[in-house]
Each structure stands twice: as C-alpha cells, then as structure tokens.
Picture 1 (cartoon, rainbow, N blue to C red):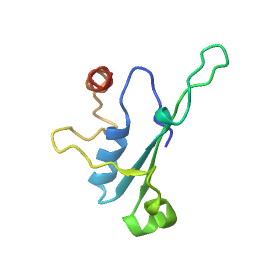
Picture 2: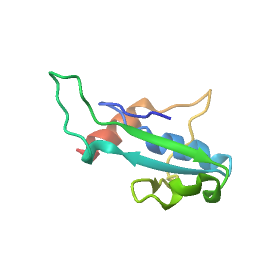
Picture 3: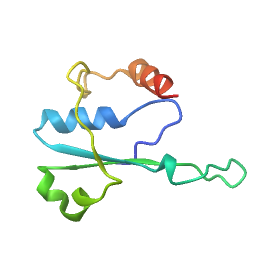
Length: 96
C-alpha cells in the first residue's frame, strides 16, 4: 500500500490492521533515497507491504530497505467503524 502523506503517518495503521489478522508488514521509506523537488513535483514515498508471514516476502525480506513494521499495541486498529485521523496527524508531526 502506498501510504505517503504529508499530514498523516499511515504506515502504523496498515501494520495494525495486518497484526489484527496475524499478518506481517514491512515498510520502505524512500525519503532518504530521493531529493524532493516542488518544481518538478518529485516527492519521497512510503510503501507498506503485507504478507501472511515473513517467509512470504521472499527476497524482499532480505532487502535492508524494507523494515519490519511492528503494530503498536497502544494504537487502536482502524476498522470501518473506527479511525483516528487526529492521531495520525499527531504521529506525523512528531516525526518531524
């Protein structure tokens, strides 16, 4: 899933949903790989991949650019009935 967002941290949301279904999430944050350029509309990206277990990632699991994204036990899992947009915005602000 492409979870890049200038205002919200969403990788932990995907990791939480994956964890609720006994799955594993790995995140690749390309913010260190790319130079952002507003004039060229070039921005970094964050992607989260989900699989049943780590072995299903194959060679991706061996790639140092893809980190295991553990679900935060203190963060409620988003569902059709629950989301926490403000929490996602606060997490993003704390990253910066």
